[in-house]
Length: 266
Length: 364
Image 1 (cartoon, rainbow over the protein chains, first blue to last red):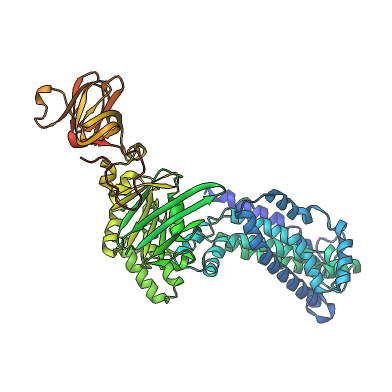
Image 2: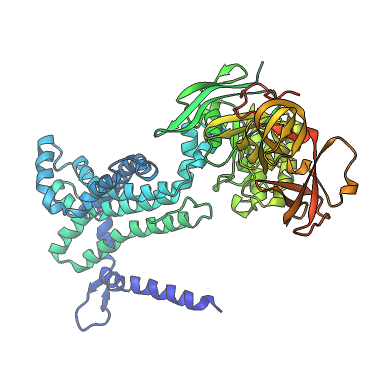
């Protein structure tokens, strides 16, 4: 069988990726686990129960992270779709400079800019609010989204849109029935990036949120200081789940055979 | 009243004039080919008519209604492009039904119409396939069906068959023409292929450098081109200058030709290569009024359907004769070229009036 080595390779790669999670998984269900024990001698579900108990604030952090990541992703799409289209399909002077400018928030460390941003947000009364946190999350997500979508639009044959117009589609009909389905793979990839960046963001949330916006990375950070290995492990595993769910969902969307339009050099 | 009227149409791209002061009319049910070399502005003209581009100047009227400010989706014109551009995320059936869906027709009715239309382009049973499963010819049939199903007032075809191989192209030409005959749809075809334009169109509008050069029936464009560029584009190969004295046209070599046309003074002359005949024996020359020039065969090309023989008549005069493929002539052989008196055409040398049928500048 020719496919066997390939399957072996894929299985190996998955094993390599999942192996580091194994100790986490064991930690999360261990009462106590000390060197030189190979496996813990007592098992417990207390850490997992704690995650779902209202008193731990972990559930709250989870929901807040989810809400912030989803809103950040949506807003990045609202900005990234028209901006990516302009960058991908139009030719205008200063295009390269604009692309470089877009990369600035990624190139320049947020450490350098955070104090200034914090100052502005305090004056606007947005420091320590969910809205303020969403705004700073947009700093890294909008460039990623725009750059991903610009290369998707650069690979899109705009003839499809003209064709659809000539067949009687209004601009909005064409957007919904032709353009968005054709660029769906790029939208999924861009959204995945934006969601994960926001979901995992610690520093920006920590400074701008000022401890009042309590996302999952904040929870994890607090717990790490507390030293409860079992609970940290359980929360860490929980924090990986949305990314995995999104990835599975995305890979299914990308595998559909009509996913043309291409991802280009994403 | 003219069905489609294009007046003074002008379009520039960053200082480059793509279409310059173009005037054109079409009758309802007519098939007109916009012919010209690539980059001559014919596709731009088509996109201006379709409303995908906005003219810098000029106006377009369909059934007397000004179209300039009508968006493309409300012009009732359907476009078929060379690339086919079937929507890859839709099935063949959904592609054909697309225009009906945009018009708000319900699913049952539009599926029924799409299937009926696929039947007419000989693709029955293809409605559930994906565009990626189709051959080039099948894809163009679907594109054609998708455009025809909405019953457009004007069908615009931009090099629809250029991507297909030669045999398939002829088959598709027949299919398009038979569909046109059934639906009586008014059709504007853009092509760079004079043979295709000739086969498909009732009139050809020849375009060079953004300007119309001659608008005429294919046969007239072949026989009575307005200038040398037009003649060359239509496959003309024989050109020479004569000094005309009424019906007697004198060649620089001293020989003279008798033409059915009368003219006075210097004249640029063209001869269709297929109108000439070649004789190897002076005794067999036809006994009709005409002209015979003796020369030497210097080239012999076999095209499969024709033999193209070049004959050197005088130091500065060679004539190409397109004859029967069975008439083989050895190089260096002495031959007689027979030129019928009505085959000689004097080029007026200036663009013919674009909208009206051009009258020959040289009258007999």
